[in-house]
Amino acid sequence: MAKLLIIDDERAIRSTLREILEYENYDVEDIDNGIDGLEMIKKGNFDLVLCDIKMNKMDGMEVLEQAQVIKPDLPFIMISGHGTVETAIEASKKGAFDFISKPPDLNRLLITVRNGLDRGTLVTETKVLKRKVSKTREILGESDSISKIKETIERVAPTEARVLITGANGSGKELVARWLHEKSNRADSPLIEVNCAAIPSELIESELFGHEKGSFTSAVKQRIGKFELANGGTLFLDEIGDMSLSAQAKVLRALQEHKISRVGGEKEIEVNVRVLAATNKDLLKEIEDGNFRMDLYHRLNVINIHVPHLTERRDDIPVIAQNFLESICNDYGMPVKKINDGGMAALQALPWTGNVRELHNMIERLIILSDKVITENDVRAFANPGGGTNIGAATSTQIAGATGGSGMSSSFDSFNNFQDYKDHAEKEFIKFKLEKNNWNVSKTADEIDIQRSHLYSKIEKFGLKRAE
Image (cartoon, rainbow, N blue to C red; front, side, top):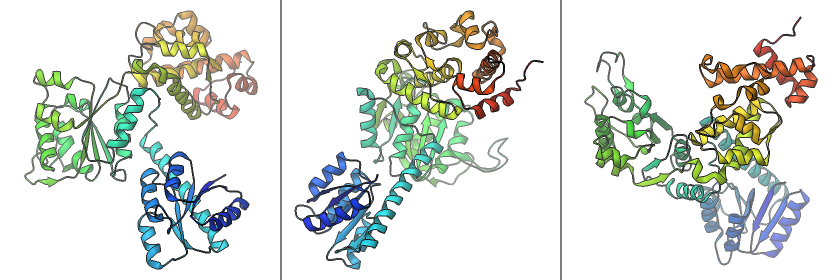
């Protein structure tokens, strides 16, 4: 049921609107002034607001402007007994969805409300889809450090300030960068990411600034660099501590003058780019060792956001683990598994050398290799208490029990990567359960808690066949 708020200083109008809208099964609240109305918008979860323009205490247009800052996607329908074309245009410019005159026509009122709610739903769905496509997940956790990061993002994102994000590998630095872009005024423009550690030092300048045809041996055609691709948007320089000194000098110049030159080119190209940078290194130590420029460090470090190690916020692990459980099980098309209290306590006790990234991998492993409820024994079986999650730490007996006695623990070197191991473990697990149930697919699907159609897909994928 959609929740609506009416802000109007005339009781008769409020009562009339409320009666009409409640008859149409809307959940309606009303208030007689804009100041209290804004407080209700801050605290409540309204889907649409109907707001009078001429009111005591605070003008309706002012309420609209302030509400746009608090909740920019909340549809506003302005109402007035002195409506003119000019007033309607002004309301639209300030972000109102529509404008209706008093006394409101019943049909027009209901159609406008319905359209406003549809528009609000479409805006929300579009943002969700954009985040899915851009891989922008929520920043999970309620610890003091995470709350501070979220608050800093809210304050800093709408500005043009450069941000240096620090933290260990896998802690979520990229996610912070994505949210800084998502909540910035550049959100409709591209976010271009560059992993400075993954690009050879001799190619980093070409990657960042582009090159002209023939500027070096393999430059068979002109290439546009990341700075140009990010023009109007955000450039995220990940692992900037691994950037060569010559590239650092060019980046510094680009930040100072907002101009770049392609490798082998003479023309200066103006760029309008907001730069975010991240590193897992101590840049001050890198400066002392002569590996990083101090002037570039000060240019980048206008705002510093440090992402803490997962072991520094263990209370957030249950929330993060539950989120991973739901998303991974949904991706696999299977019912969401549960972790009991002992299993969750065991997860919280692990050293997490790989941080949140390692936790995600661990949850995926537990989903595949555990039964319906993940226990403390499961966590211990598939984790190395002495140094991060490592499937090799499980004993032969534990692995055999989880995979139908396949003897996998004796030959981990035969797997090139975790995906290969995961597929093998999944195949052996399903094969064991099918044989145990005399190849009764329905019974097996119920026992391992997945859809029958999904089990058939797995049988086909792994080429499983009943023994003659």
